[in-house]
Image 1 (spheres, helix red, strand yellow):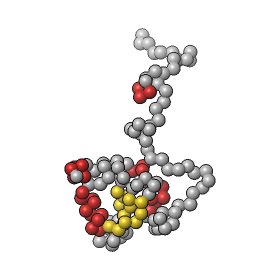
Image 2: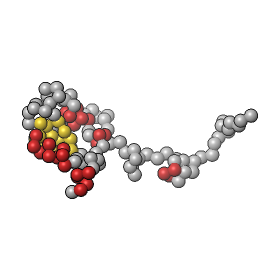
Image 3: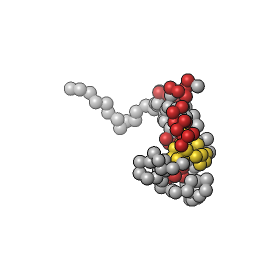
Image 4: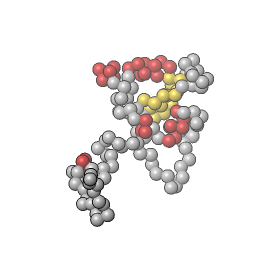
Length: 131
């Protein structure tokens, strides 16, 4: 309970949960567990359109929103992916959120996270020496 009051990075604060619960309508949920809502009316709108929200499942990271839901959130698509899924090409890969800063992040050879040992420099490298 205290985590919900004092943190914004773990899902949503109590304030936004209250606002979405009072003003929003549940639209759908994606494969990552994020939940999407739309305002009941344009009462608190900035541009005449209904506001849309995402409540993240776990850590709030914008790259966890897939392209189809991102388009719906930003009014690029009028219908949510639950009603009209985004057409995918055969060559497209599945959406992967940004893994930087997680245990699943890519760590090249020589990085401190992989032991810090890197290959010896080849003969084409000449160290600078002050004269």
